[in-house]
Image 1 (cartoon, helix red, strand yellow):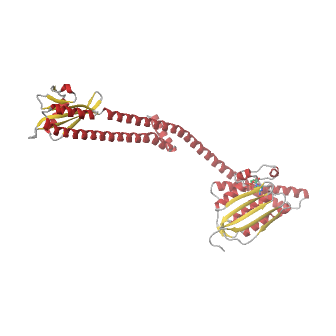
Image 2 (cartoon, helix red, strand yellow):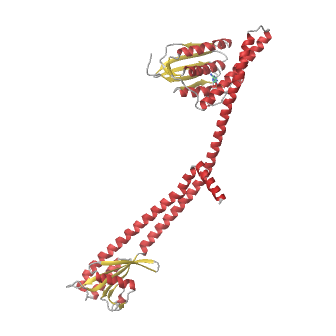
Image 3 (cartoon, helix red, strand yellow):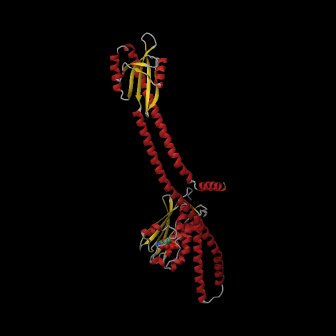
Length: 454
Ligand code: ADP
């Protein structure tokens, strides 16, 4: 009992965790059942229609024949010919007789489609007897009933022939129609329907086999997602934890700098400082990635003229550019307002201008910002090594770095452009790259101009 209850609880739990099961049950039960019921209903209606049609057809035939026999009951030869003609035209007819009145549960066969019977007595089975008696009781109509004989369905019908002067029965028109043909067609339809049903069930089983695999994949996908989010949480926590000791180190670097140091010690300190700075930037990138992925990065959008922010970023890179012998210039002009978070916008510019300076060994880095149609478009052009068309396609992927002689010596994480792209998109902007290997690279960032222009 206990184990049964356990199995039941486990089953309920499993179904709750795998909603696909409901879908599966739907596939297995509901679809074939619906198909089965529809086929059954269709065949039932078809069969009823066929019965109704046959009955009314034979009713009309008997009515006409009874009227006609009423005047010619004595001319059996004439009636015989008529019976033969009708029987010949109706290929499902198995019996067609004109009978005289009942004589102790027997009836004289006046005319028959089967000539030899004529003149003999018919002792009908109880079913036919009751049919003939009902026909006698209701002389103005044809009565029918269904009988099974040797696995075949027949319609037996009788109609009283009344006297010319009164309404009393003087004989009967009796017919029997075989339904074998119609039933054969119906049976074949049923067979075809069942075959189709079988095919559907087979298809569903195949689908289920696939479905079972999809359930496996879904479980695996969920597990991977859990692991991925655990990894993100871990990375973000570790980055946070790394940041505090780093802040302490950088604080001490500043303090030591104010001390009197030997030339060598000053050089060592400079190295320590630049490494600490790099580490700090890297941690910043990792934290930004974690925030963007978790959708936790906030954007405080404000309508601003970004020319000032661009100029500030350019200024901050002037010393580095000068040290590398590069010309760094910005074509400053007043711009229409765009809705951006200025801190994030500066971060985007730092990444793009920083990369341009970082990956250019000679020549210049030139920045322009202008209103083009409904956008403010900022173009950062450099005369660096350029990026091949193949690499351009992967540039905005996480951790992607171009690997060649020029980039080998340059340190980086491959996260900057991924972060930049995500931030641009979050502020409804677009970013594109145009580059020719050996000539240089242009990064083009656009943001839509807001309504209230200056
Ligand atoms: P990182 O600079 O940390 O490697 P990014 O995501 O900023 O990462 O850049 C990805 C890669 O794109 C870089 O490794 C570099 O190879 C290439 N790249 C980016 N900007 C430029 C540029 N202006 N010129 C040439 N290559 C570039």
